[in-house]
Amino acid sequence: MQNITVEDVDRQVSRGFPLMRFSPKIERAYLVDYAASRMKLVLGWAVVGTIVYNLMLFGDAALAGDVFKQLLFVRVCVFTPLVVVGLFFLHRHPTALCYDLLAIGVGVFSTLLPMTTVIFSHSHDLYAYQNANTAAFLFFIIVLRPRFFIGVIGLVLLSAIHLITMKLTGAFTSGVYLSIASLVLSTAVFLGAGAYYLEHTDRMNFLHRLKSSLLHQQLILKSEQDGLTGLLNRHSLSRISADLWSSDPPSTVCAILLDIDHFKTFNDLHGHIHGDECLRKVSQSISEMIGHDGHVFRFGGEEILVLIDNADEAAGLEIAEVIRAAIEALRIPHSGLGQDEVVTASLGVATVTTQSNTLEDLLKKADTALYHAKRSGRNRAFKAHDLASSTKQEAASRLPASFA
Image 1 (tube, rainbow, N blue to C red):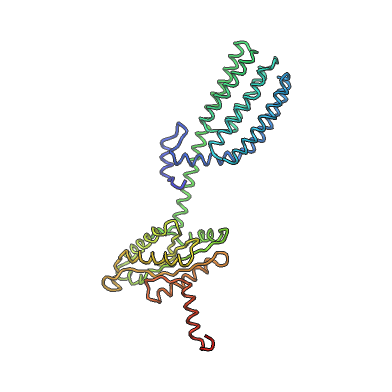
Image 2 (cartoon, helix red, strand yellow):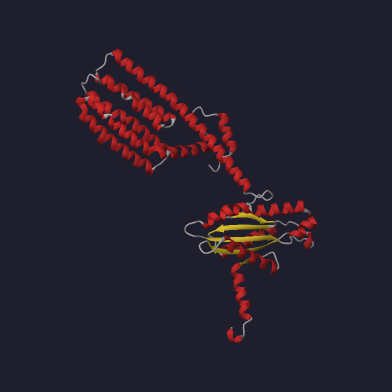
């Protein structure tokens, strides 16, 4: 569904789908949704359907008593275990194709087993008995609701089984058999037409839900996107950080906090329009470099934040150096720094484990590292670990020799 757009859905609606098939990528999404919706109900209909199917043994006893033992065997000892095996298989392979295969299997065997058995019956009530087979047609199309073309195949098979077995009984005159055939075939045609419109409605509802979902995603994206740079905004930081901090097992999160050097001077000399363009170019460069490996936010003003999951501080520093060099390579002129000078950035890198630290802890460390990167001359990356080490060294150098 990630590659489907609202425009794709609109085109599909305008073109229609008389053959019950969408464009390939929308069809794939539909089949996933179709399988998921059927899987929610499959156990319920299996239990209820099997109970009702076996309760029809009372009718077997009344209308075909001379083959009742055989009917008892095929219903309880053959069909019921087949349903259980089919459910187990579907549970292991919950796809649209497997569901349709199970549906057509249930429909065919629910008809084939009793109807082939009554071929050997000498009952005078077979006309009444065969009418009960209509329930199998209804259950197959209305309850199981396979896809249309699978439904058509199933109806053809069910009709053929019904008509062939009734002919083989030899219990009906040609006129009676013709009336049976007309009833069975008309039932199949009406159910086939119903199956077509049921699936058409299902597919149209799916397109409406899909479009609604895509529009909702667009709204979320716009609400979480900075209008100037296209980067994620502070609002999205709360959601994404919550996801990172709720991971199990806990992970290591690296933050790279970036600030464009002397940006106020750049704005004053070049104007805010050029300042906005500078921000866009820098943001685009960082976003393309990070790609799907992390999350890039406009943190405020000329500050940009990068969050990378499962990255240690050394890896974060390498990435920060690549970002710093890429910004410098943009060669955006900065006349406030002198002739031939360009826009640069300072970066602070920090890493924490989500188990024992908060996002605020991480940002404080990255901000402190950024401060020292600027204090050390700008256009450089500084990591929090180096800051801690240098602080310890400075403290040690101030101690008396006896304590060093």
